[in-house]
Structure formats: structure tokens, C-alpha cells
Length: 238
Image (tube, rainbow, N blue to C red):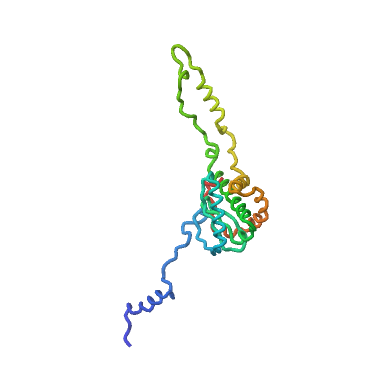
């Protein structure tokens, strides 16, 4: 038998590679190539089982109802359902609120599910305000443009009637301001926010008290939260 050429020896390996039997000798790039100590804020790749259509549709419908009733939050997060039996509830920034199907099935009514979602929405907004800084929570509102009319300007024959000055003094007294050395105001209470969101969505405030056992069960599980969320960088931590 004659000796095969080098090019002929490549064809069997090429055929196996096309069929998926042999992987090409290509160096693999890690999921987080730029991550490391002190750099734990890059996105992680995580996969989880999808929830049933029934559970996902239920969460999405009630979540949309809550957001539509509370436009003052300024956020429109996605409501995602994870197909897992353990109860878990958490959020990612202001973009997503995630809940497991196991926790959804523990909700006997839509009101209980709405209470859970409002609870997490309250936590989301409170964290956003804490990261925003005191100047955002208590902005320094400038005085309006000074437009003097009639006797406000005075003249040669008579002085100004001081009405404009009195009005501006009242405005200055009513403007919220932070003292130079005062501690920053605390972020809004997430519990109070959750109750307000729930009432505006058309549910009773007492539903939050009814789901406290479910919230306690969800607080004991953090598996998906650790996979899907990352700590904020040092310069964004409150």
C-alpha cells in the first residue's frame, strides 16, 4: 500500500468534526474573561428551566397591572417566572423581577401574588433611591423667574409695594433644603412603598400581611439570586 499524503489524513478528522464527534482544538474563552477579585459586577451566564405557560402568564398579567397602576415609579421591569419548585423572589436592578413557579403556586389568590410582586417592587425602588444620592431624593428647587408686574417695580412717584418680595420670601421658606452637615435622608421605606403600590393596583393593603409566611419562605432561598445577580461595584454601593 502506498503512503497517504498529509492532506488525505485530514479528511477523516474533518468528517468527525462536522458530525460533532470530535471538537476542534480551539482554546475556550471563559464566560467571564475579565472577571476576578474586585471585579464581580460583570454579567453572568446562567440557565434555568422555563416555567409553565400558565404560571408565567399569571405573573406577567398581574405584574403589568401593578406597573400600569403605578406610573410614578418610573420603571417598567419585566416579570419573569423561573421553573423551579423552591420559593424564591428577587430582582435585578430596575429591569427584572423574578419569581419561581414554586412560590407562584403557593399563592392561593391573585391578590397574594400581587402582594409578593409589590413587595419586590418596593425593594427595587428603595434601592434605586439609595443609590441615587441625597441630592436626587431632596432636590434643590430653584426659584421661578422673577417677573415684576405693576407696582412691584415702583417708580419716581411711589416705592414698590413689596408684594413680590413677600411672595419670594414665602417660596424660600417652603423649599426643601439639606443642611450643609446634615446626614443624608434615608431612602423610602420599601414596606410603605409596597403597600401604596398594592392599593393603587386595586388590592387590599392587608394582603401584604397575609403573605408574610410566603416571604419568609422565599427569603430562605438564594440559589437563583446568586446565579443571576452580581454585587454592585464599590462606587455604586450605598
